[in-house]
Image 1: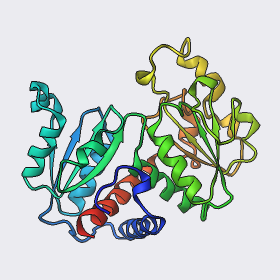
Image 2: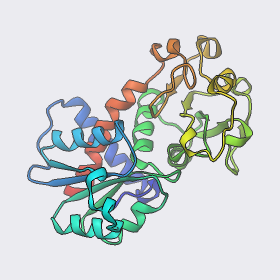
Image 3: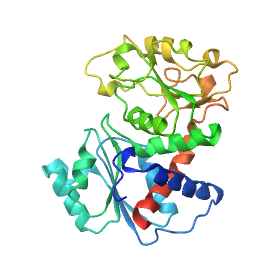
Length: 291
């Protein structure tokens, strides 16, 4: 394994190995500096708080040096191509480059022009492999083996790279995935789907709520987000006392995606996902860079 562009780049055995390493990091707050002397460059052509900081914290906990390229001040703003940017950075001798881009496919193309490992930090509506890995890690921690478990993915699925990557992993590990969204938020799919979350709430073990990505919509799809929330917000009234796990990749639109009350509920694992994200990304970096 040299690059991580999509979840399909990982075998099931490699995923389980990453989870085993992440679990060791969870049990050992002060991990050994396995990447001491290594250099990691982050390039985020699209804004990010969680993913970028999670990768940088993960790298620094392992002893690596991290350099962030400020895209607003980079040569790409002066007409330099993405390929030349990648080739120039690669010539500086990093051990890994982490890239996010608003256009699908960019990490795959850049990987052809560099000699070090490349990790996709999210590209367009295509893929976000490390987010799906940390989501799977979190679900397995609370639900055990996922074979036969039913997981509802709720929200703006058509625009979501998180949904794409999670669907592949969840199905690979035996989970039954049901999509819940208004018609214009649903992709073409062979998966079961519904427009009404109440139709499936009694049968699901977990809910993965997604952010409504209005920045990816070509035209307004709702008069207001409150109209969307009326039908798809995860509320205490909806989940009741059910034994269920609630996830969200963040950032959460409070009282649109998930209500304040549910965010404070112990069944909601949003902050645990953030914590697990650092652990899983540590394990991914070790896997790619140190073998």
